[in-house]
Image (cartoon, rainbow, N blue to C red; front, top):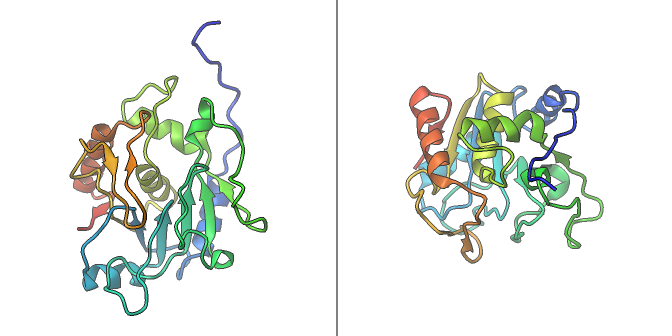
Length: 225
C-alpha cells in the first residue's frame, strides 16, 4: 500500500453559516473588534484585560484561563467562543458557563488518523460545530508551506487567527497569549492554566511565527503584548 492518500471530494461551503453563528455570540453583529486569547502565561496588565473585555467578540482556546474576582487583571474575564480539539486538557474554565458560549472543534488530525471520538468528560448536553478542514485547515497548511499529505498541521491559535480573519476580514483582529511569535524554538508549551505540555511532532512553529509576523506587518492582525 502506497503512502499516497486520495482525498474525498470537498463538501459544500459552510463559511457563511459559521460566520453568522460566530457573529451571533458577539456584542455587535458583525463584530468590528475581535480578540483571540491564547494559552501562554501573561504578566498582569490592566490595559490588556480591559481591551479584551471591551472587544465585540472574545475567542479563547483549549485549556483556557480567565481572570478571577479579586485576582490581578491579566487577560480579561469575557469568553464568547471557545475553540478546542479532542485531545484538550480542559481547565476549570474550559466548560464553565458553557450554555452561553459557542464551542468550535478543530480537527486537523482527522485528515490522517484522529478518530471521531469525544472525551468521556465532555458535557453530554453540549453541542459543537467542527471547523471545516477543507475550507480552513488545508488552505492554512499550504500557506505555511507545508505538505498537506504529511501529518503536519498548525497549532490551534494560528488556525483560529486564520479562521476569524477569513470570516470577518473587515474586523480588527488582535492576538495575545501566543508564545510562538517570539519563541518559535520552544519544545514545551507553558500554559496560563495547568502544567506545560510538549510541542508535538505535527507542528512547525517557525513557519507559524513567520506567518503571524507577516500578517501583523500587513495589518491582517495586531499582536498584543
